Image (cartoon, rainbow, N blue to C red):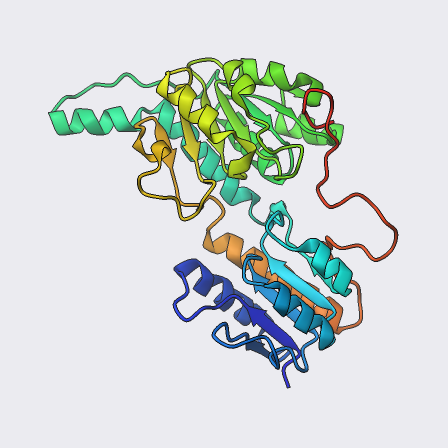
Length: 347
């Protein structure tokens, strides 16, 4: 009987979900038997004999599934994905099921490349170039180089550092802020011109030619880039968001773009997904919009599959898994919590 249950393969899966499952199944091989959860059937009976559940993305589990899993003795739940703001972490905690995600390091290269794509899109005036081609015009528009521009990174974890490395190779001046100060060797290797904390938030906003968001979504980062923050940015600056849409106050961004108080925005995330085709942000020529594909690469899927299977093998072998977001030792702050200062900034 299978000891591993895979959750996240509907009857008509997207290409991404097919890759996620295929890479997981290939990596798991015959190390442990597994079966796929039938989403068309109720939870009762589907967790019998299951020790470990592996879920794609974290959006498929329902409270009934979690309760049934706990009743049947499931003791570990692995999410193939990073963000957990949409996951019922407290319910897993109450049910006694260890829950793990896969940190940003597994998708950091993909996110960094996508953010850099956004920078180049604006630097090389892609929309104007297409318009000139259609009009039979050559040598127009006049583009700009990234060299000498300033990139401000809000959040300096795995994806922020990967972007910093790539941007520096283009001659970009890299500035960053985070709650945690990296090892000095990391800052030196990445050639970060300035690193600060939340007190430097306004400074990074005002200096940025490109502002890229790399923070998790939680109570203190929701609407972090609000109307006030946007007002501090140059009218020639570009906002890049490959993190979570709720970090940016949507209406404030729409207003800033309409009033040309920002050059543009590269957005991979939206409040409602799939995004409505009539969404105001999709009507702007100076918005590069993509459908939450920044981290959607074959390489990301393979890295995550290898990490998920490694955790499955740890648990089935009697060892503790990595990347836990539940804690059954001592009480502590919820995962990813950031304390908020008087101005609403993370401390």
